[in-house]
Image (tube, rainbow, N blue to C red):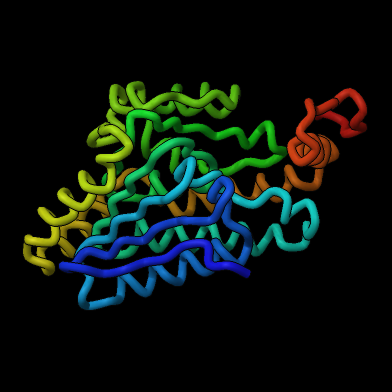
Amino acid sequence: MSKQFWSQVSDSIAELVIENPPVNALDSVGWRSLSQEIDALQANPDVRVIVIRAEGKGFCAGVDIKELQRHPERIPEVNAGNWETFRAIHRGLKPVIAAAHGYILGGGIGICGSSDIVLCSSDATFGVPEVDRGALGAGAHLQRLFPVQKVRQMYFTGEPIDSAEAYRLGAVEQVVPRDELRAAAMTLAGKIAAKSAVMIRLAKEALNGIEDGDLEHKYRWEQGFTAQAYMTSESQEARDAFVDKREADFDKTKTKQD
């Protein structure tokens, strides 16, 4: 298996880069490894701030659906890797800046929604096409970015929103041209890294403690419905259609609706 991301540390800033062509979708091993890498960076005494970005056409397309079609028994492991990755970002006591470009889908939403600060390029789009893939998830993290009714509109339709709308809704700190995204993120990270590490750690812990609800618990609740969805013939047809690059035909499914 090829490496799906890499990281480096310089001037107290850890730079973690997702790079898994063609769409930066991670498989079950990739998500679990990503969570372990973030935990290691959070524990590294030389790191004060973490920047997560990506190379390629887009930031992250989420899970590798083709892997799940070939190995449906890996669905629990993918779910666990997602949960651990988002937990490592959100609960780790060092600030995490997401610098996202292009498409930000599924697990990419989870990364951004778990982060402390989000920057994006002007070509960025945020979306949750899960219902069209026979799955659920990332609603808790999407709701950490956008207002409740916007989240539901995005979730029910599968339609993405662009960077300008994301900025208008307050989800992102800054929108910049793609070729300036890394520099903008590193500049912001440098400002935070220059502060007292003790004070920043205490600040993040305090801010996590005053958030409404428990992000990890809410996401775990969602994952139960994801597992339930995967058991339906509609989910199977949606995933088959995605892999086959065709429109889903739900009329041929036999699942009864309550």
